[in-house]
Length: 206
Image (tube, rainbow, N blue to C red; front, side, top):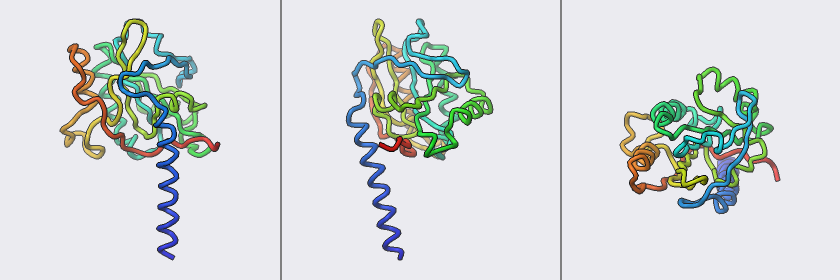
């Protein structure tokens, strides 16, 4: 009985990994130009990267309401916006989980989460999951730092926020923070990628 349960669990995990890998293989890589998108914010308005003409770049966070890892990192995403929005790198959070598979990530639930946590940044609903697929996002959270070059945005960092999902104070490698600080200083990003950790995005049934 235990063997059967273990095999079933392994099969499920393997399926999640394969689905995630399918989308990640076609996603953006460091140095790629990001295609702009238009998604509905929790305030009902449509948001795109082109909206902020003074932005030097963006910290894009694929996250959600329900994943324990995303919840653990929520305060750090809020802190990143507080630290870097005044310096030209605001946060844009995107929720791409299929609400049929994860009702706690519905648009109404997103609105409530943003209100309860006093988000000072857009929290966008990628209902069609088109943007998540374009980026190659697989996890919540999955971070992308993009820098502005003319009228385009290019990927400078992909991956985790830092190297400790449980305790912010214990993280000694703050990947996103370091990447943005280097970009602001006009330096190349030393660590341009790190494996994203968190729950797999809940994709729509094919």
